[in-house]
Image (cartoon, rainbow, N blue to C red):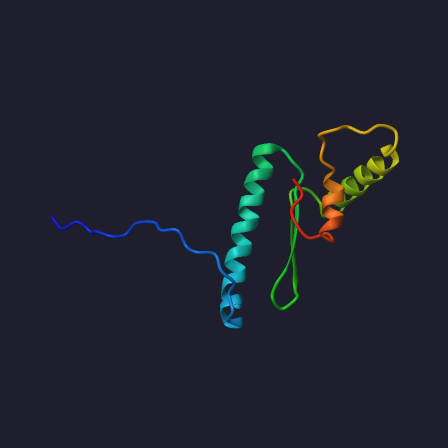
Length: 111
C-alpha cells in the first residue's frame, strides 16, 4: 500500500498582491470567505454586524446580519448618546470605539 507523503497544510505568508489580474481573481474568493466568517460570528454571538468592501475596481460590496439601514441607525444613535454623555461622567478603562473609528477615518473593524 502506497502512502502519500506531503507537506500538509502550510502557513502562507501575507503580502500585497501586485498583479491586477491576481487581484481580480483573489478578491471574490476573499470576499466570500470574509462574509461567511462574518455570518458565522454574527450567528454565534447574536451581534448585529455590517461589512462594506470596495473591490480593486471600486465596486462596493456589503453584508449585514440584519438590514444595513438598521445597523447604521443603531450605530449613529449610540454615537449620539455617547456624545451627549460626554462630560457627564468618565468611565476610566472603557475604550471609546467611536473615537477609534473616527481616528481611522471610518476604516477598520468595529467590535
